[in-house]
Image 1: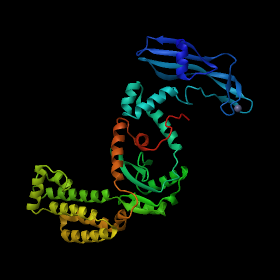
Image 2: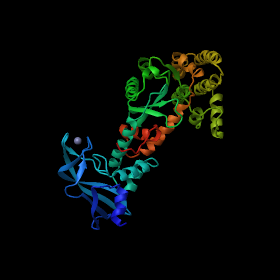
Image 3: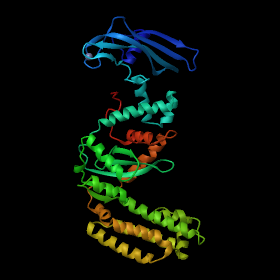
Image 4: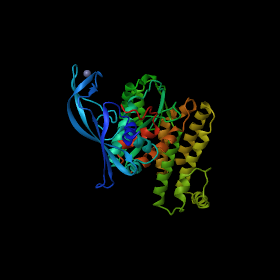
Length: 414
Ligand SMILES: [Zn+2]
């Protein structure tokens, strides 16, 4: 076996293709190994439509980047024929070492995909010594191919949440299958609100799924999401994730604290102390800050106490108990707020809870464990790191799919 045979094997070359030349160009930095592949004059090639062996009509010379040969970049050049088929006319053939339209060999692309599954795209592009823009194009191709094959016929319950895709007011909304433990992401789309549910319904239909089969949707308390669910997933029950209830009150407490800090001097650790839960590990400074807030009879302390009461509601073991506790919570909290001006953010949060009371209580009869939203946040963070340096809606969505969607046969080229 000579060196040409070794390279032929690596490329998956088969008749009529043969390596006809190889030169190492040492003028280039890094050096370039240039391989020329040709078929013998008069060779026949399969028609891309029917497979019949046909003669070449004309040729066009093309070049592909291949895996590095040691430290040298490697390029393959070949005159690619268009054939003339009796039935299908003049057609461009597909070469066995690259997919249509790509400037890279299949082996190069597969190596690239292996890299990007484990490291940020920018890092992979540096190791492969290529522009990250080109690498993104490869990733997008393979992810979209795998995505097109995704089968959602079994989808019965989903959860959705939005995240900022980059600075400013750009969002993407991500949908996860609540019955899928591993790789739960089934859809991601730019934007937020009601229109994303319409987009998901269409995507579902394109992937053997049915909106009518969805029996449960877990969401936050955004009116736009909830109205979208009611419009597009008519057979579903809506459950508000408890995480969002707590988040609503954490934000309210923080708002009260910021407003109050303009009027009175607050203990320095107040911000962190009020963001944390009573049972979590507070530092000594934070404990002092809480005690001081209480002693000074501040509205921030009142708001924080109301937020902490939520834990008691959460610990209810059945729907009846939960309903009773939630009612009691709302009454007491409203009473505590009274008409104190600074507590307006808390009153607003209480009104939201009242509005979505049934959806919040649904978690006690839900068949799907909550806490999946937190898993989503982990995915968002990981995707942000992977797409660093080249993050827009599209690349961010591609990486989320790559990391967290149930993609099958990711390396299948067509
Ligand atoms: Zn044909």
